[in-house]
Image (tube, rainbow, N blue to C red; front, top):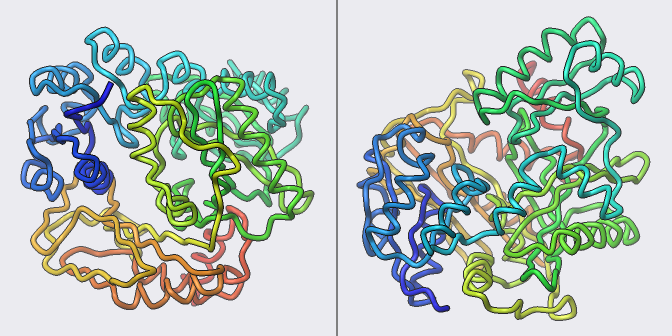
Length: 450
């Protein structure tokens, strides 16, 4: 099957990103947009835009029936869900199949296996991957007993999702009851699933992930990414390949990711995430994201591939055109997420109108964005404005290129975190590479204290 028209069930920079690939492939794009996004950059670029509901995502982007009906009404052959919203929703994939639409992503069975974090842990164990010690908990007593078994501190995590929602660190037994109640409440609000589980907290852990492509029969990896620069479990800076890994550890992580994808007979683009103990040089399976990632551009820059195009080709039923020997990782790439937020007010989102937007340009610079001068930043959605991606022959050159790129990026009308990125790049510890997920919290604390 060759797609003539695709419905894009998303917004912002990822919608623009998918539209660009559709244009290059000669595929018509239909944007499913909320009322707040009908005048967005994505709406202007798409061949057609259809309104699927009011501004709030619960009444538009998260409504499966509205998305499917929009695809049927516009005679789209397939739905690309982007990331976030319904991108890993098995019910949407099932509805697509029932409506003779193609869901550009894995099958619903794979989404169900991966979306439930406890099921994903079991699959990882079956595939031979190491997992962080832990397990399900149904009561305070079970939580305290398991924490004593695996060792304090521990991390409470939501079974039904990620992104830091429903996740709480607990350092001692007296904190467990309150943390458990908060985690369950957050998980229920975010995922309509209050179930949580417990894992040992690895204090010196790095977040390292592996990009996979699969057609169900063949799986290839596209190297590692490091996403350890996080604030409240939200990624801020990503790079590829992950710096500071020994050759043996890197190979073992690659092999583990491929083993997991092979075990699932995975089909589409997906990312296997690992927690790397930088002290012990050990790694553990965390989860798999069965979608395109926000940080996918750094992998594209070091491999020369278009991951959205690969997703579309696989969804059309084409066999994977690449074998592992065909993939070369060249150079280094870094991505900085530019968000509309006020760092002087605990990074509170900063909606408003962009009065001026000037982005850097150059042969080693890529900007993925949905804003321009005059764009509205609504208060209803994620605060991501743009991703600045730079490349270099090595990490040192990529860092220099990013410094220059940020210096030539100017956004006015809303608060942004540009100054934070500039300060991060100037930090010698970050420049050396290989920091863990606790680095940014300490960095922000030192910065606040002068």
